[in-house]
Image 1: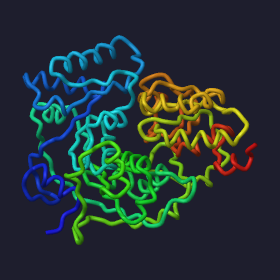
Image 2: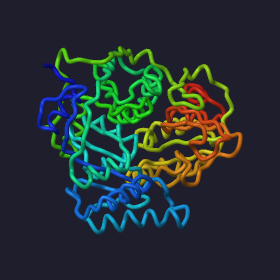
Image 3: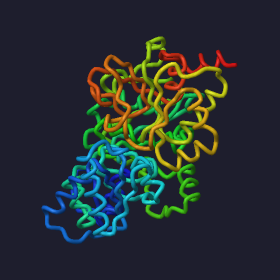
Image 4: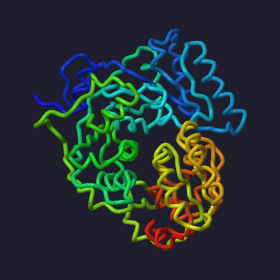
Length: 421
């Protein structure tokens, strides 16, 4: 019987034939946790009386949610992560290295066909590399770390077929918001979202990361893409093993299929207070903005900052609103410095914050003031998400956020290019 990608990978990890609805104990290839979920996972492990971790080399903790550490209480929680990791020989990426969903990749824990579990809902990001990326709670993470295996129910799959190609300036963030609007905030609850179609070739690897990341907002169990030519070249450059990669079989069973022509997607903006409530940019042009946030685990990659840099080089003016920049990792930050991007952003009035979650979830400096309208490139705009229930958060691509920050109002990037030097 034909299988979806998810059915194939769960079958491989469980060593038995599995289809949607089936259950099995599957081998976990990698675990990632952070300073928000990690301490509770450790608490569960201690309550379970676990004395030995099955595969410590497959696990990494990333200190990313509270950076810099805001108080002594959080400091003690972070120290519990360091102490536990030291006892069991587990790697810790310290504060300042970056956000888990970027750093875990940079550290080489990902490979096509891997089953990756994380103590964060946006573990779905790893589907861009043909990984089963599943976010889960602390008790499940504790079991995965202690045994190297975990109980799963194989999810049904929603197929998204891309055709056409994105227009110039339109990014993976626009595509992600468009797909999320179709699915809704609960439309993929405990389901896999599988992407494919000829249009996928027009999307960069960073575009694909963003799309899989945002699928967490539809409550997807995981999001996954096939190993196509672009993905294989990405793996070859990094020396990643592709022998466990999986593709869907012709005629496999999908719960639902969405047909999306990428050429029909324009710049999208999610309005408060749901990432699934998005509209075309043109509907909001002119809306005053008080703060812009560019970066985070969704859009804090080099390609994002390069797009912003290209926009700035062709426009003579400073940011008119408070503009926060959050690189996804130290590695990305260093490249921004080397290429002059960081200096250009600073010269235009932006503030560059440490590579961490920070203002995205209101856990570190960058909280908007009462009444602020924020245009953010993050993945969530829930009420109070950035630490203030009296602020309104809109979501957009980095290009739209930068153009809007330069003008002080929601702006089509084409307007900034038209007003260029």
